[in-house]
View: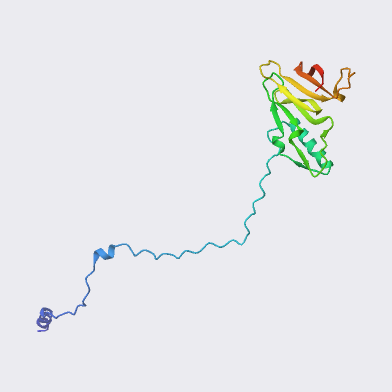
Length: 208
């Protein structure tokens, strides 16, 4: 009897309560997680160090373009002007004129003090014998010799149609060497560049 009761109880179907489970969205569960939120930019620290002050630009060389020996002659003239309590009033780099005296094809240089002024002081390169002329003649690559340096009342270079240019100088009688019985005050001297030197080839008294 007891066995029959156990079997009967086992055959009875009892309802079982089940919890309601929401359906799972597989696609959503496999999606990538949301991106991290942007990090706010942090401003760079402001430097309190002062900006470097640009130095002064290098001054241009006032003697640019002149050979060193010619530049030194210009500096001599500047020193003479300052010694006379004056102020040089010229551009040193343009003071010397390029001329042709030697037949080597290289530039020669002439400083004619007619072209310069010593402001506020006595001009030391002019007198009764004329203005000072300084001539530099090329003697080879990068070499020049001071071939002429004295006062003259006139100074010309004649190289038109000539194989050897001539330097014509109108000089005060103090620089003339021929006898001067008539007591002339000037002479005309002609020079040529020969054998590495400026040589006088003629001299005549100037009667005008």
